[in-house]
Length: 355
Image (cartoon, rainbow, N blue to C red; front, side, top):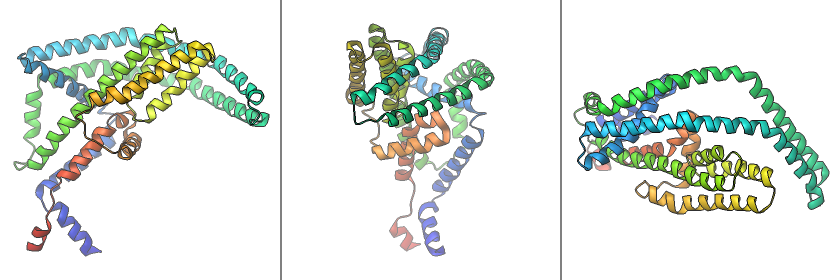
């Protein structure tokens, strides 16, 4: 057993670059696991700066000076951020409050619908319906007992958002304007021989940049194109539901299934099974089909092909470790794992024989 472990260690860790990569990954993930809450504004700022830097590079290709490109992109970012804070968030908060107030009415209609099931479908018994109603009633009561007593718990969240609103834009600006200085300082800590690290970074920079920027575009486009038919048919809580539909694309496969439930429930409570319900449901499913078959291939044509099983595993693992951020970065992190496995320096069989 010891001999097998010794040979395995020699095969994968005899190269100094492999030792450096392993130590760096260990330190990096230890910091994330132990200080992620404290460093959250820094991590959010890095992600935003990374996204904006792609736009800045595009402007530089059009012969814009970097300083001018930074100020143009940053000004656009701040304008969009102010619009979201001043216009979008209050609207979503208002509709969310209305939706919470309408929950008792929705539950009553659900009870009525369930009570009619045995008459319309004789294979369903009254006993089964009563059991389902009691289960729903218990969940609603449990939810109300959970939400109401903990209203004061939202105060720290509000304070955190206020801190983010100051720190994040400031950090993003410095990351963009002093990018070269920061990168040079970080590179100074790397060993002189870093061909493997450079190879991994080049692959990850391309793949992660394409994926993250594409995912942001997908969230915006899907949310926007969902909002218009919802508003056209005068669906209740159109803004809130459109935002949920847009955010659902962050979670591969699962997000679209989960967000379909509130969309159909709100439409059914508002209209029942009439023409408006069918139009809203039809337009929603058409958008989902267009997203999966046209938009995703266009946005992610350069992304690394990863098996769906690997994507689901990555979502479960990284989502369990880092929550929403882990889910958002599940595919880039899976790509990182793939890049590490393919580029990891190994001792060949011939080298092992010579050794």
